[in-house]
Length: 359
Image 1 (tube, rainbow, N blue to C red):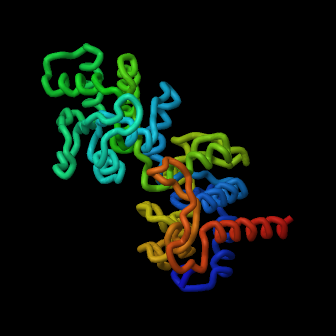
Image 2 (tube, rainbow, N blue to C red):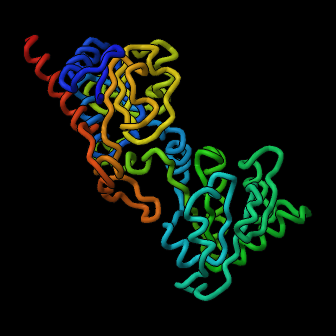
Image 3 (cartoon, one colour):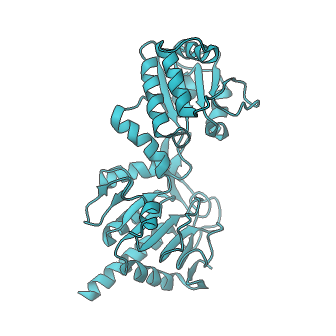
């Protein structure tokens, strides 16, 4: 089955009616997750506006680790293609980047463009797992964590610290690069780490060319960020309680709202895999999840829809990490009966009908 209401299997039309009734009775609903194709995320924003709900993506922690420093101090970044084509020195910060395909893309060839073309590429690691599968020079993190490690490294680069052989050596290697890149996961190093790292990159650009390459989160945050900007003019965490988008990353944090008892209904959108929040099902909830996911059953929320997974059982526009752009992913096999965008649009239309009938 593709839809459930109160644990019982039903057809999509009945489930849409149940979802519309649930959301219509809410005073302060939250739409969370938003790990889906862009057409579904766009439909979720329109639905949130219609019912005066707030919006909070599961990608929020990663996005706001970057957005805070970006708003205060700016950023110097590059693209995966430029990093692979030009970088003769790549510093990989932390553990998270090592599982990404970009590391193998970088390690698999020397730079082919720019001043460093043909030079040997040096891969450096700060606080990484010492992964022996990729040849690199490893430097341990400080006891205080990655943010502290980046701060100490920056101090060595500026000449404000001296005497620690390992970090002094790493600082010299970075300053000697012709085109350097720092690869990092914003969620792993946190807002303070990102701000310190971008400061270090600006310091390096006083003597050479150096850029950051932040990894995209696995929950479509980069695509969502662009859609949020062109839809609302704001970053993703917004509320439509007054039917204008009001941005407040603390106020519209869905977990905080639900824990504080401020929200009385929720819609969870995750047609792509995303960690299910602890609060799902603890208040009146609608869940729109991918076919075949563990959540595609009638016991996770009051109303559940199992929809096509973009790139598998549905087509959809998604973030392409290698291109650093939004690209269309066609279905790889049989197309699912329901789509996330279709369900959200149907709920929106049913709510509009209910509102018109009540007038």
